Every structure is written in C-alpha cells, then in structure tokens.
Amino acid sequence: MRRLTGSLFIFCSAALVAHAQFGRGGGWTTGGADAQRDFWVRADPKISRESMQKPGFQLLWKVKLNNQPMQMNSLTSATTLEGYIGYRGFRTLAHLAGSSNHVFAIDVDLGRLEWEKALPSSGASQGASAMCPGGMTAEVSRPTNAGIAAPVPPRGGGNRGAARSAVGEAGEGAVTINQAAARGGAFPGGPPRGPNDRGGRGPGAPPRGPGGGRGVPNAVYAITSDGKLHSLLVSNGDPTGPPIDFLPANANAHGLIIVDNAAYVATSDGCGGAPNGLWAADLVSKDVASWKPAAGGIAGSLGAAFNTDGSLYVASTEGDLAHLEAKTLKLLESYSAHPGFASTPVIFADKSKTLLAVAAKDGSIHLLDTGSLGGPDHHTPLAKTPPLANAADFAPGALASWQDSDGTRWILASTGSAIAAWKVVEQNGTPTLQPGWTSHEMAAPLTPMIINGVVFALASGEFRSSDSKMSAADRIQRSTPAVLYALDSTTGKELWNSGKSIASFVHGGELTGSGTQIYLETHDGNFYAFGFYMEH
Image 1: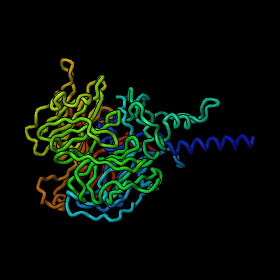
Image 2: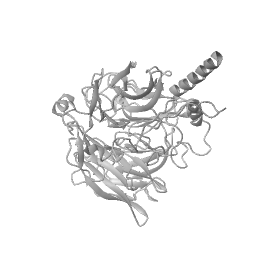
Image 3: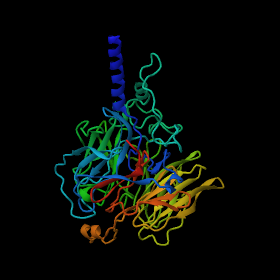
Image 4: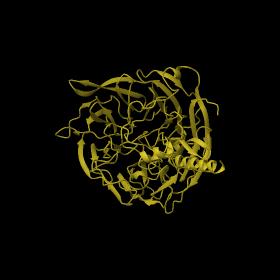
C-alpha cells in the first residue's frame, strides 16, 4: 500500500506539474483581447445589462506600482492569464509593463503584486518630448491564436470554465497531460477555435517548433527601450532565454503581438531613428523583417490585425491598407482610400465571409471583404459611413466589434468626445453599415470593450492637443481624472459609472477585462480593478 501511495503521489504530482506548466491560458492575451483586435469578451458569469443596473459593481482595489513616468508615457495596458495553476493553486494573473523598463505581475484575485522584474536596457536613453517619451512603450503580450473565436464559448458559464477532474480513463493518463498533448504542446491559446481554422497555418505548413510552435509556453513578452524582445515566465518573471534584437533603441513601439512563433510590433514618430512601419521577428530563426508604407506612418494604436490563416492587415495614415504575409511581411494585396486611416483594423466573421473594418481620418468607417480587398480596383469598399461633421479630434486608435445574442454585428469607435456604434446589416446580399447610437459626451474616451453585451468605455481624461510644442508637463497639468462607464450595448444608455474613484488620467493604452473584472492603469502608476466583490 505504501508503494502504491507513493506511485499515486508521483503520478498526481507529475500531472499537477504538467498543468502548472501548461495552464489553462484563458484571458486577454494581447492588445484588443485577441489577434483580430475586437475588444470583445464573449461571455461572463456576472456582468450583464441587468446586473450592471443593480448595486454591486465597484472599485475592488488598486495597486501602486514602482514606475517612473517618462513624459506622457507611464504604465502600459495589461494582459490576463486565467486559471493558471502553480504551487499556490489556481491563480489569475495580470501582466503589464512600465516606462522604466519594469514588468509586473499582479494576483488579481487578491489585488497584490506577485512579482516585479527590472529588465536590462543598455544603450537606451530617456526621450525629450511627448512624441518620443523614451522608456518601454509597447504593451506586453502572450502567445495568441489566429483563429476567430465563436460568438459564445462552447463551454457555458462565462470565462472561467467548470472545474474538471485530473483523472483520465483507465490507461489514458491524466486529463491534464492529454489536454496538453491535444494542444500540440503547451500553447496557452489551446486548439484552433474557429471553423476550418488552422490556428494561423495554411495547408501544407511544416511541423510546429518547440512549445507548440507559438512562442514559449506560458511566457509573457516585452520590448525594452533598447529594442530587445524579452520572454519571461508568467509565474516569476525569469527569462526563458536570451533576448532577441528586434528594434532600434528608443523606438516608439506599440501593438506587440505574438502569433504562430513570430512577434509583431509597429513603430511611430521616427523615434530612435526607427522608420515608421511594422516589424516581425521569427522566434525560432531570430530573423527580423519590416514593412514601411509608401507614405506616412502606421495608423492606430495596435499595429496589425490577423486573419485566421496568419496573414495580417495594417493601415497607414496616408490611406493604404496592406495585406501582408506572415513573418516575411511580403505585400499580398492592398486597398487605398482618401484621406488616410486613423485606426488599427478589426476583423470578424460574418456568415461565410471574413470582414474587416477600419476608420478613416474623416471619421468614416470602411467595411471590406478580406477575400477581395476593395474589389477589382482595390478602391471600392463593401460599405462606407458618411464622414463625421467634426472630425478634427477623431483619433479612435482602434475599433471594437461584437455580435449580439440575436446575431446582430456591431462596430464601435471613439469619436474623440463620445462612443459611436454602427450595425452591420445585409442589403441585397451585401453587408453594409447603419448608424446605431452615440453615447453622451466623455473626456477623450479610449477604444471601448464589450463584456457579455455590456460596453465599457473609459473617459481617459487626457488633455489632447495638436500643438506639438505643448510640453508634456502642461498636458499632464491640464488632464483630469479618468471615469469608467458601463453602457447598454444596444442603446448606448449609461448603466453605471465609477464617479470619483479614479485619481489620475490614462494616456493611451486600453481597458482590459476578464474573469468578471475590468482593469485600467493611470499615469500616476496605479493599477485599478473594478468588478463584483467576491470573498476569498
């Protein structure tokens, strides 16, 4: 009996270690939630239009982080990892970076700092302007599946799946080990999620590399101000290997994403001498490729959005929307429009098609079929909304998209002073756009996010100015505290707001949400969590 107990202990320990390494990997893995940049959490056990009209949703906690702002640059937006299993049991972790080249992990169930890592950054210096602030600028990211998720997860009950036994059928081994094998390794994103989805790999693709072929298992990636790409274990921040030379030092980088064993990021404003463009680093060969638009820079705040075959789309400020090959960034197809674009594209499934929406500088929204980008002449969208009457402050950064329970597809954007919504409807067999609603006025709102049919919008409070000579100190002084709002997703009616619970403004970045909580980061170095209180 003693030998049997020992064998069972070894077996169960191995299963726990395997699951601790593999994790369940749910959560907000990259900017905009996923590779399509849709800002949409499909389901949640507590957040709904009904629950947000009742008492209970509130500020849960805030954590002050050790970060020194550089001009307007401070904390980046977070990623989340749900259901991670370590020696302390099930955990939900949020990872984010700071301008002072620090990466932080927060235990969001308890509202406490899990670990902090100061990354080396030789040869980098602080910037002197809001345009080129210096320090770490890109958000962190975890490996992300290129497949489009179903409108509602196959398992009910919201983001956190039901607990499962670790004991498998006789002779089959532990469920945890079988689950990991089914994923082709330890990729946090799990198996392909969409119909006919190959997880970003076309037919005839070569076998995957180490760790499932999609980056280091359960690692978080960050780009330091010297341009190096670091891979850190989510559990303790230890490096998984030497960093990769990726960008010129002091580049203003944004939109970092890891898809199918490659890292992608955009650079802007010519900071550090880096050309304005999109960059790709192969995580196996360490080869780096770049793509630069014929004129202007990369539009939007998140760089590229991805289709299910792993190819990507990126818009330029001068009106080119480029379809690029994975890793090589070879131009496959393009669409051109006047007067230029203002957002990262968002991609979504619509019946048998995969559609793309992108915002232009004049406030119009362009709807395109990824199977025929702009039609035969590459200039004709499926639909285009009228320009905004006052588009001077229109800088949405990115768009959000979600599908209602009745099958209606919505597209949301920040107009600079409110949130606006459009419906995707079919007319004579062709998708088109119809106006939906516009929210009440907000102070410089960021891209909204959607959780289970509730739109969360953040009035960032940042003072924005087209005056390039205005100092960061003046902008900081004239900014006001941020306010978080919950809106009815079908009408735009306000359901809830955070009042005066946030003490500072938010520069750039985005809201993050998972596990019935909403996260945001303020310029003064605080990380906030809002949600329904739960005893631990």
